[in-house]
Length: 102
Image (cartoon, rainbow, N blue to C red; front, side, top):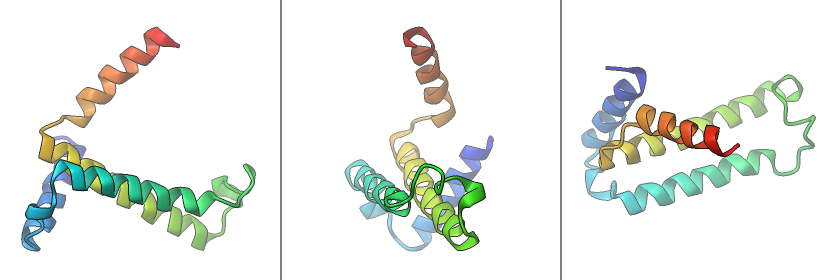
């Protein structure tokens, strides 16, 4: 198993222990990704480009950004797992498409 598959298994175990499977429909999970992505955006909303770099963020701000990135990743990995999508495979496919386009 690769790292993404290991994370998917851990996330599924966490959800199963809380009986959240009933809520983890593709619709709900995709909405959760969007919501958490919005929270990530909010962390940067009033920062300049320079302020938004790692070296210019406070440790507290960086921690908040990291937690929002984690939330987005958790929901995205869970969505892919529910749909049976191999993230590594589809990312490579999309990179190949982008390579031919740009």
